[in-house]
Length: 305
Image (cartoon, rainbow, N blue to C red):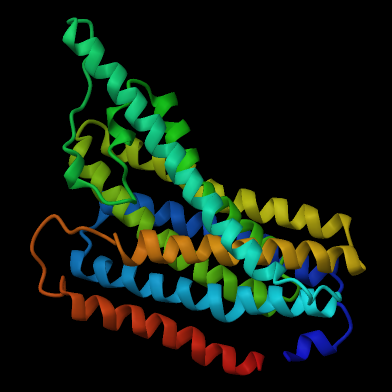
């Protein structure tokens, strides 16, 4: 059993812990925003982004199963709820909840596209940027650029950033500083590569005012995780003791499912699609990148045993 379960319950309102979470909020926002606007200032190697995305998938897979799911299960055991596999049920719920969010995104996009197609057939459609669907991976949904207004695009980004908010909550409810820092770098890794990919696509598809476009979309994408961190801090500031343990066990169980879904369905299976041929775009290279990501988390977890 991890040492932290044998120790006294940490003070979730301690000044040092709250300060760490606030710093995490600031760091993840700035890293994501800078990464999103960086393609305007520099050229990224697409092979690096491809392997980095797979590496992030391995890290997410490891943190979901080796830390979050384990922590949730052991907290439920500590709370006397070991007769039913609550942690695993919550993990499945988190997985399905994230899948539902993705389904909503697809539904909104297809519904809008059907309306635009019908409008175009009558000659009343508004002019808009046409983007082939197969040019984008999951980071940059074509719906971003086929909407008729900036407000619609923001709405879709917010929907696609659903799991980013939950990732932020995971940082915000961390019971120790070490857990907060570790979750921060895992989440930041994902957000950085996602933001870079989004920025590259924006540069290619919106030639007019690319810096303004990158900054606007990056800001909305970057603010989602800090919002989650803030929610987590508020949760921890209002509860203590057994109630805090229950909340942590439930949220971290759901988070394991969210992270598992993001890892398997977004980062590993879809990943980043380079616009030009790169030598590392092979199944073996991708497998090795995922393996390294899982291995990093497995080694880190030695200190938790």
